[in-house]
Image (cartoon, rainbow, N blue to C red; front, side, top):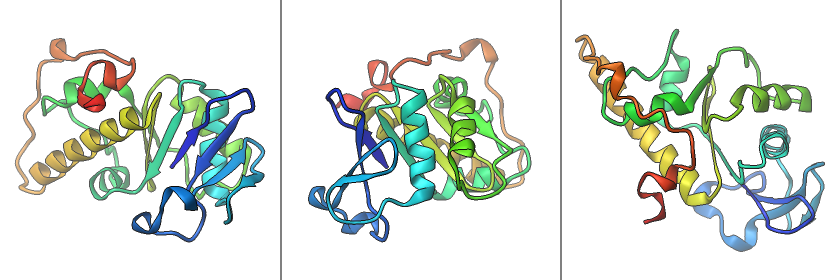
Length: 192
């Protein structure tokens, strides 16, 4: 997970390679530039993270925070043929227009070219379900990105749980979609 730092020089903080999330502290984060050079802190920048995070930060200035994780239910969705969030839960009315699905990322990201492809595909969306991989969520703040990620994971959990019964999902009328792509916290509870 990464966060752009305020200031003229484009710098971001990110968790270094080799830590579990529960082991991280503020002092263990590293500061890097968009070329992947560690400027402050001790530790190694994970190259696959660099090629995803830095390229998204570079191409999308609104993506101040980038969270790339492999949560259980969104990752399960990414493993399914045609795995997309249905328009079944009330949360889908807000989420579905904010999601893009990457079905072409067949191997781990090893270079800027693939990172640029991911950043272009993300475009103005805030959630990318990455086929056979996990999810990336971006936002103008940590609380925006985290809350949207949390709601997306919960919604995927509801869908996967419902599908596991073998019953058909109910569908909400398309006319109720929110069609909102602005900052998550401007409409939802992230700031709270």
